[in-house]
Image (cartoon, rainbow, N blue to C red; front, side, top):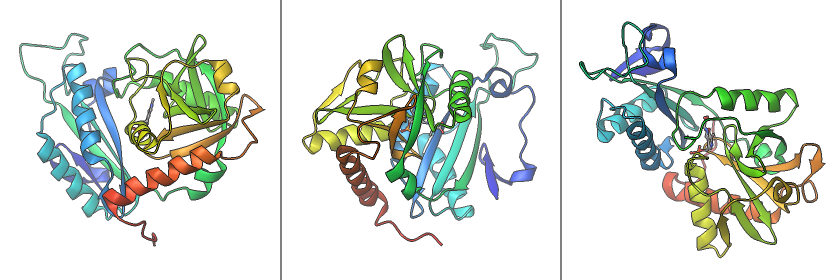
Length: 289
Ligand code: PDD
């Protein structure tokens, strides 16, 4: 198993980061998770663009051009023979001694890129049966649009869900539902789709963007607007979306069944449309050995 450290492909056990890397000390960095189907990246450019946008928002200079980064990641997944799986990549602000909150401007820090891969088959059963969720107050910072490696608020919420035997924690600020610990959330009411607008309170998921696009192109009314906890609990259908979860139905929230407790027809239709987009970019789903 090879990993990437900057432009070096290394054996996993030969790869190390410096203890004074700002990513390690401050969580000062940005990341992406990109999915591969049939050995091809899905929405590759969108993820690379978002990485650079996140970096720009925190004034972090990524030490490679987008083309070079794409080439490095392509080599990594080939080397590891990934068919259907994930690439995790992050760029930290780099090494600084001694530790100091201030980003120095008297010498340039070199951002540190690391990337690894995992073969992860599509969880077809989960895409149909879905899972339950809890709700939790969204106590994260106010720049959730940045895909930052500082994820304490997210992991605390996810772990709370896990302990409750739930798949996800759906977050809310007061009465307004934002997103989840590691995914976006959408609801269907009277045939129309509602999801929080893309602003500083959510990560504008790439999966979210594909879903909204195919929904609009197929005549489903989309509201990118505030909706409340009462709307969530009273929805006809609820689903979450992310690179790895695609569209996963939420069939119960805080112990209350949503709709009839099964994946709803619009969720199913949207997943079909999402799969068509995957097929368009990556080809018909091949059986994974
Ligand atoms: N999480 N919101 C949050 C807080 C997320 O962490 C994610 C993704 C999303 C969905 O984004 P996308 O559709 O681009 O994957 C929304 C990734 C998969 C993770 O941290 O593992």
